[in-house]
Amino acid sequence: MSIWKHTFRGVFILGNLVVGTGFLCCAYSPLLSPVAHPVLACAGLFFPFFLLALIVLAVVGLFHGWKFMCLPLLLLLAGGGAVATYTPFGGGEEPTDGDVLKFLTYNVMNMYGDAENESRPVQHYIQESDADVVCLQEYQWDAQETRKVFPMYPYRKLLKASNGNGMACLSRFPILSVEQIPYESGSNASFLLRLNIKGDTLTLICNHLESNKLDAHDKEVYEGLLKSPEEQNVKSDSKYLLHKLADAVAIRGPQADSVAQAISRQSGKYLLVCGDFNDSPISYAHHTIGKGLTDAYREAGWGPGFSYNRNFLYFRIDHLFVNKGFKVLKCRVDNSISASDHYPLWCLVEKL
Image (cartoon, rainbow, N blue to C red):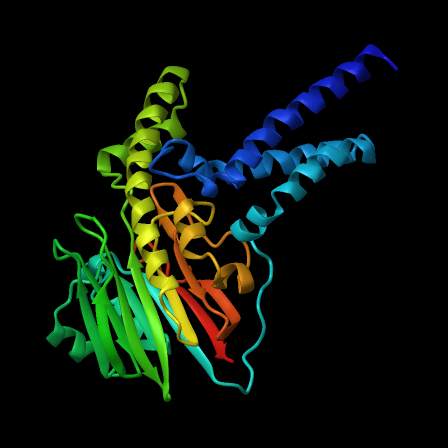
């Protein structure tokens, strides 16, 4: 064997080990406590980059013989659960003749898109969504305005966090009760509601977990890294942004624990959890809240499904989970409307 082949093999194996280690660290980072390890708990944000690098190595190996493909494929297999969670390709199935319901969760960014556009795109999207139950985050309209513009939803609850940050539940079915899930936050909240759906009680948990609090300056820093990735700037600015993200992750961890504890106390047949988690599918919050539940997007979604869409930041941070009382038929992130910094996430489920 020539020295060039020996060199290629050595570099290829080393590259796989380095990339594979990063890939697996990202894939299993949701198991880390974000309170004890806030920086490491952010590793899931880098998962797509290591995934792409590992796929590239697999393709390179393909052109040099099947033996070179074995290592990257084994690494992909070891992190396969995270891959399926991050970018599923199930697609779902068509609605049946059973009892099918549509749920919609949407961070409407205080309806700024409607304030800037006389056609009120967010309002009309919700009106025409044909959803049976709608959960909204960053919703500020009062009860009178809500009743006026959403007459198709006779049952409405406006939900307020401690500083007045608004959420809302719009429903075609009676809302029996509502309670706030206790956890520490200056501006975010989670609420547990019980709805009467055709004689059955649905427990619905609507969430708006702690924001990453990236302000205009932070977003300018991030855009600057993309446009001018000079080594000195990359080191200092990346460290600054990472620590800011880590601070938010450390706050979200206990919030996710509180929501998970509330879920564990529920004994009803039907349970649905949704909202803006402000965290990716490869995160402690997603893993902890979704434990024992079905991630609707993983079950019946297609592709990475980025739901946040501003400032060159693209992540799926809006999620929806159901328990075994539902069969997930379809789940989509709808990028047909861009009036908010989030896209709406909707899901069709069949009652079992």
